[in-house]
Amino acid sequence: MGKLAPRSAFAGLLHSAGPSAAPGVLVREETGLGLATVFARAPYFPRLVQSAYGIIPPETSQVVSNGAVAFIGTGPGKWLALSRNGAAGWRDELATALGVTGSVIDQSDGFGVLRVSGEKVRATFEKGFPVDLHPSVFKPRSVAVTLVAHIGVTLWQIDDAPTYELAIARSFAGSFAHWLTSSAAEFGLRVEV
Amino acid sequence: MRIDCPFCGSREIVEFSYLGDAGVQRPAPDAGSVFTDYVYLRDNVAGRHREYWYHGSGCHSWLVVERDTRSHEIFSVDYAHRETVR
Ligand SMILES: [Zn+2]
Image (spheres, each protein chain N blue to C red):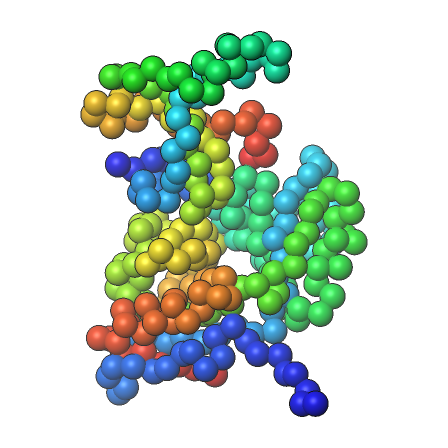
């Protein structure tokens, strides 16, 4: 019997497209992330997050990060909790830290995460994201849960470059990659590893 | 039509599902024919109407929207559940 190897959500799905000399959009899959959906169940939930990770989960559509761990506000009392320390044990670690104050559901294999940047990233996202991404409205730490080409997307902004990250349900990775490739092709899309 | 979700901000209608009249009160289980009215009978309001909308493609909140059914003008949007954590 062959040994089964882990396969990231976007493996084999991202391809460079359009002008290659000075591509306007850069994309890279972020792999090996710990991901979990977290629901607050008690008023002292934020204090337990703070004592474990030194950050207070945002109550609005914002992301707060300590560098390794981020709480991404996706709804009232609900977050996507992301760890850059790897998927192994992430759900259990959170569940232990939060006890009865939070419900934790592992999503490490459920979502694929892309990091997208480049001079034309806004011009590309404008073609599909039905939210205002103008820098006066959507800024570093802003979060939007929305639909792009009927595909559910959780988007958050990392920095002013702008750099974005987005999470997409694994089974829609191919469809989203198709949308991104088509939409960025006129500017040039480069896949980074 | 756009709805100004209290969590997500202004979003287009495609992200929401409509449930209907937010004014009806669920009667007691043994209320008899009153229960039939509760399940099936609705006023066909021309004008201001308080109604439930679900932000299923966004934050998954149930909302109460007060809307003019003739113009789609929206007067207020709030969480349907008072206990919703903010
Ligand atoms: Zn919402």
